[in-house]
Amino acid sequence: MDRAQKEKVVEELGQIFESSGVVVVAHYVGLTVAEMQDLRAKAREAGGSVRVAKNRLAKIALEGKPCASIADLLTGMTVLTYSEDPVAAAKVAEDFAKGNEKFQILGGAMGENALDRAGVTAVSKMPSREELIASIVGCIGAPAANIAGAIGAPASNIASILSTIEDKAAA
Image (cartoon, rainbow, N blue to C red; front, side):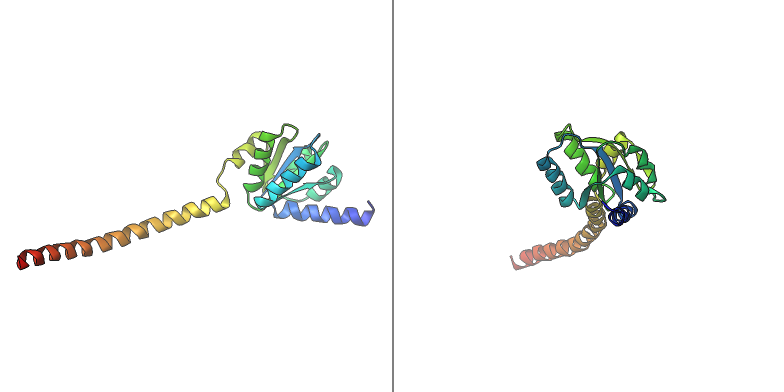
């Protein structure tokens, strides 16, 4: 890899570190190509990505970035799982680690906050952005449905009372 290629990789990694909601660092010693492709596919489904990069270049890219605290984790054969959604990459990494002991999560970063192994697990258990939006919409919509039901109920009660009065008058 020549100097221009290295500079391009450092720039790409810098953009990843800058724009990602969460970055998870893991060792992947012994993973097969098929297992790595499976990890990439799961990350893509969740809206994230997986990147293997030289640790030295990743450390250069981390300089001055909010998640610079993960530089100490970049030793050995490391893989980065990242996503804009602050939860997606952590969920993918945790799920993959449960089914594959060769994939060992070291830690990560969520914005400026450094995460250890337990921190990544905690983040993975949080609801995703879509789940939070759905619950907020549900909370907002529920009172409106209750109000509509309450407004409609007296009218139907009045209609049934009038119907009963009408039936008695006709009899």
